[in-house]
Amino acid sequence: MARPMRKNSVLKLGGVGALAVLLLGGGLQLASAAENTGSSAAQTVNCPTVRDKLPAIPAAAAAGVERELANLDEEIARQNERLAKQAANPQGGANFINNAILGPLKSKRVAVLDRIEINFNRVGAQRPNLDSLATCGLNAPGVASALNSSVKAGNAATGGNNTTAAAQTVNCPTPQIPAVPAAAAANVQAELANLDKQISEANARLAQQAANPQGGANFINNAILGPLKDKRQAALDRIEIAFNRVGAQRPNLDNFAACGLN
Image (tube, rainbow, N blue to C red; front, top):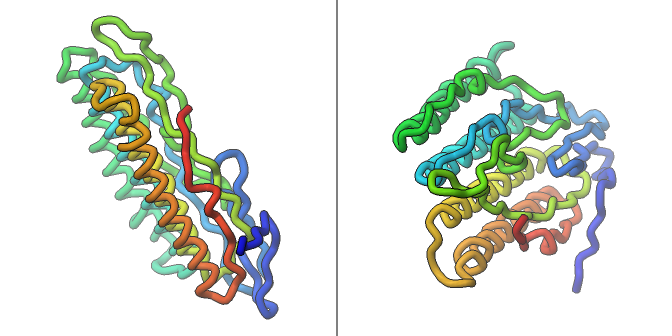
């Protein structure tokens, strides 16, 4: 029997308020629909995108650069998960987020950006200076993080002996999730971060495939899109279970598992 899906409605359980989750503009938007819950919408990290700041990427460096761009997005997803947990269960003092989340995030981004620069340098291309892109701030509650998987290259190469055309990226539907009970918010946020991470990983593989094609005509479907659908289905199932576990109506998110290509 098909399970009814409620989109962007406010769920109330026995007078306990919820966090309304609205998916707008391709990103997660958390808005307060509270009734004495003590919970607030989670902030997300606000990091400068890197893909659109890069010069044309040499073909020999493309796979390495894409891998590091995916690393940047994965780290954003991890820190957004931590911010969601912090919103649900605050800990530390006033500087906890700066000291425990934003500070370490900057250090990790410095290392990743350095590896991107090295990828250029290693193949004899001019090394870009990406130092200014390491520091992140915070978005207001309800604003989604900008991801490298969501922006176009700022200076896309068009082929030739030394450069590579921009790779395709996956085109995944944004899950339309009903209002999230406060008790399920951290788990839902964590799984949404997993979905972003999966997209980043698939985009990195597509970049590697563009730089070094392998397999037959169905390679992308069999080796990238098929496994991505399976991973998304598992994450979407865990979102449904998070609702069910706290006594809320379980949404049906099956239609959001399959992805195509941009």
